[in-house]
Structure formats: C-alpha cells, structure tokens
Amino acid sequence: MRALPALVAVALLVNALAVSPARSQQALTPLGDYLAGIDADDTVAMTHVLKRCAAAYFTVVRLLEGSTVEGAATASQRYGDAAMKLLVQVTEAEATAAGTGTGAPREALRAEIMDEVLMFSGVYGGRVAAERERSGDGAKDPLFSGDVQFCNQLTAAE
Image (cartoon, rainbow, N blue to C red):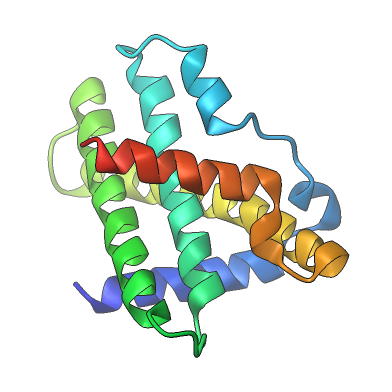
C-alpha cells in the first residue's frame, strides 16, 4: 500500500507535464466557496470536494518529491496517505449512491474517479508551474494553496 502513493505521484507527474497552458489556467472555484454554495447531503458535490482534495494532496506530494528540506519525506507520505484515504471515501460514497457492487463495476468506477482526480491534479500542477515561473514559488498559487489549506481543515475535522 505504501508504494501506491508513489505510483500515483508518478502518474500525476506525467499528467502535469502534459497539461496545456490553457488547461493550467482553467478556472476552478476555490473549495471553500464551492462548499459554501452546496447542500451537505449532495453526494455528487461532496465527492467533487473530496476528489479535488485528493488531487491537491497528490500535487503536494509531487512538489515535495526529491526535496532535501527536513521533514519533506514525512510530509509527502502523510499527504499521499491522506489522498489515498480520500479516494477510498469517494469510491465508497459513489458506489453506494450508484448501487455499484464489487468486481468489474467497482473497478470501472474507481478508474473514472482516478481520471477526474488526475484532471484536477493536472490543473493544480499547471497553476503551480505557472506560479513558479512568475514568483519562483509554485506553492504560492492562491487557488492551490487555499485549497490545500481548506482540505487540511476538512480532513482534520473527520
């Protein structure tokens, strides 16, 4: 299970490198604003939030990859584990809502979810790359940093 976040991080890296400039600037509503405008019982909206949090966390893992800063490896592992936990929660919630059982239908659902998470991570990755070019610090992108902070508060509340 520990190797899975690393595999996902590699997939996210490939996806982020393939992101077009237009896609990297795609407008996403900050998660705090998005959540304020939805019904907490709306499974689709809530799983959207969890998918974006997983994507933001995988982007953090990518940013920390190869860092020599003290604590980076531990933080990377923590964010990777949190992202995987969110993916499990999303899969369970969407499978329950759709009445999807086990086996092939569940695997197909999991693949769809991962495609969405990869797309969101690509957007975050593109924004981080653009911010890195502008300011030298990609983590300062306001949408990305705000969403990571929001997700940290959300996951701490669970």
